[in-house]
Image 1 (cartoon, rainbow, N blue to C red):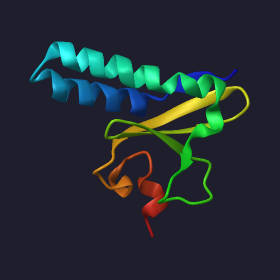
Image 2: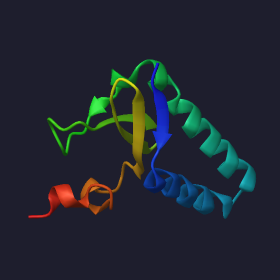
Image 3: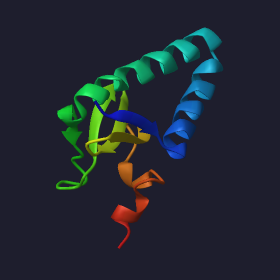
Image 4: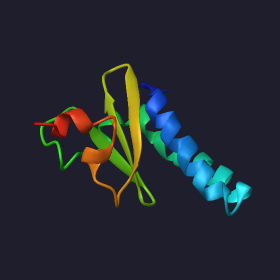
Length: 104
């Protein structure tokens, strides 16, 4: 079973999402974050279940979805690294964690 490691960038993403939701409801912000994190727990047992990133075919990155968010990660036998929690309506090339893949 793999251990989940959250990168600083992914934790910052979650914090930003929670801040946005909390403008309307602290309760729902906390609930959303708890459920999003719970959605990643299946990766401990089945790290390969995610889909490859359509923007980066053939890369080591995969994604699972929670509501309108793409939870982007990579893994090896021991660890699942959560790289980013990215809103699906936004372009991945504008995400700081992936910007260098799109620069020419």
